[in-house]
Length: 317
Image (cartoon, rainbow, N blue to C red; front, side):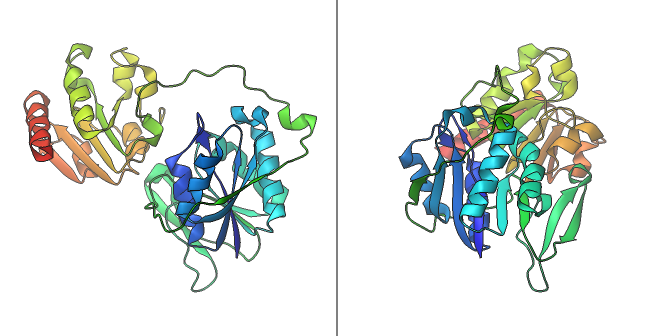
């Protein structure tokens, strides 16, 4: 079966989540990847290590801005080029906007937020997250074309192949493809971007004030994690709004999420409960977060966190 995987890059570097999509696609069939914008050939070649035999690269610089309509046109054209019946993408703000458009252009069924490989023992059934991660639905997809968007961090990266062949891929775009143009971007700064982070250290009002945030930064630095915060903290300007995680902020799904001094309001949990492992640190033993956490520490954050940092550093020496 021919599978097309759409891969995204950030500043010319392919996103880890896109490599997860390539690994996922390699479990379904023969993978061709499609990429767009300014990405070096060597960066594209490495996609092959995760299971793609070939990369179709549309280097049109107008696609650097992630234009939704043009991206959908590109993916549909690439699917037709390789006769792909299945298109796989990793969820992102762009993919969430593009998936339905691609499905229409390719006459496909679309399943979003897929959490695992399909069960093909009797047709094609996939597990998807619903109700902001509080439940799962099992969806049977009829025979025919499929567009699947997978959640981040649900696939373990596997390096099984060699460099992929990279081919320039040209598409005839129409004026409508660029009817909406991005005129400015304000990006989160820092070495570890929160939406892509494997580990996140987050804190809430239990920190008592922004002057106490250094220990959160220290814990995150020790773990190689991104920092985040609850909504009340960002509303009080203790931390920048781009660090706010939750239903109304950034939704994250890291391998490890550590919540320090966060009670665990349902809106916050809705944005983080797809994390693989959740650790809650709170001095209130009745804090709702403990019901959602895999591990809980009942204690004062100002006593627990420094000891945790010390223990991690000792284990690293």
